[in-house]
Amino acid sequence: MERADLLPLPATWDGQYVKDESRLQLVLEHYDREQLPLRRYVGFLGVDAETAREIVQESFLRLHEHLLEGGDQTHLRGWLYRVAHNLARNAQSAFRSKKTDRLTDATPTGDLAAADVSIEEDLLARERVELFQRAMQELSAAQRECLVLRAQGLKYREIAEALNLSVSTVGENVQRGLDRLKGLL
Amino acid sequence: MTKQEHLTSGLLVKAIDAELTNAEARVVKEHLERCGECRQKYNDFRRASVAIESGLAAIPVRTQLGEREGLRQKLEARQTARQINQTPERVMWRFGWGMAVAASLALGIVMMPKHKDKTNPVEIVQETATLTNAIEVGGETFVPLPYSNPDLPVNESRIVEMQVPVSALNDIGIVLEPVSSREARSDGSVLADVLMGTDGQPLGVHIRE
Image (tube, rainbow over all chains, first blue to last red; front, side):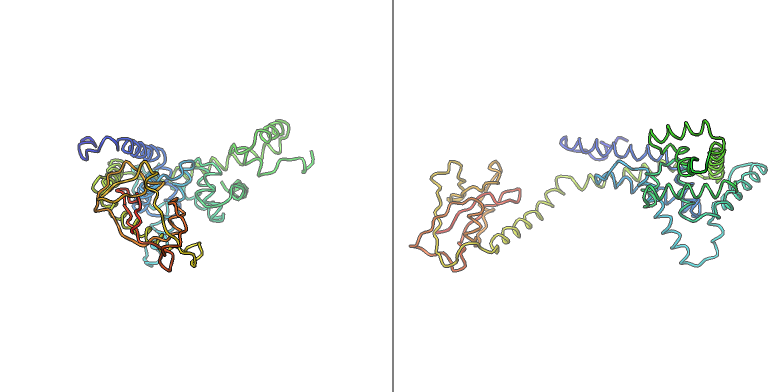
């Protein structure tokens, strides 16, 4: 059904309607490009798959609100990651406050068994992830987050936006993290 | 080559990440071509970077069918709700609030501290004869205010009686002359009819005799 069938709008508001439509399309374009890396990043932060799905969807809804309210469009990827990062941190705080015993399920490796892969692939993937996880545990949280966002293809400026750090701090975290990891991976 | 002449780790990592300025990139490129030690370090950083990307990519991400469509529907629902909030009925409802705010502002003008000497009585002379665009409503002649929109429809129901300070009238361009034969109120205000426009702004003022 066409949008116009649902709500006939006066001709004077066509411009606004077109603007809103283009913002919606922009959000969907970002979704197509970013939802998987974003979900992987949220998963890396230790959020379970279902919560990660909700966080990612909520992040894009907030992006839409941000655009409808005429928000800045220059650093949308960094903005998106910052929202997702904060939502993930909030979810973790809420999760911890419940004091349940599900904490071990909230690791990125928790989803492996459910993935549609063969046993061999599963084992290899597990090994890779475990090695990666062990190595990453040697780093500070800031170094880990900077390196993971960098691995997702974000520029330093976008990482700085996402983590609320300066660009030079991001550079230092990346360099120190890599210095530490190059002997471990 | 001494240690001081080697590239820093920071520069090498930035070179991998394409975060260098053109000048820095040139220096790094030239140095790497002739320094095996730095080239080795550069390659170590690259390997570590690739290992991180592989490790991260190995974390499975499950998606469900229809997630994108679900998001689209939510976005459209929010967009529709937003547009409904801008229908003519909604705008008129907001206009009511706008009128209330305008009335408050008008009261603010009335309560505004006056700047003129209270001891000088003044009489307001409305030079309506000199105004070619005076507004006639309900048998009264209103002096149009400088920022009002003369094209708005007017009617008697939009006339509000209020005390207006003489100083406020001066501020908005109403011609006043000090006259000693009549006295304004002791607080320097006069009784006036204010004609409100449909945009919530005062259109004109008529000083009551």
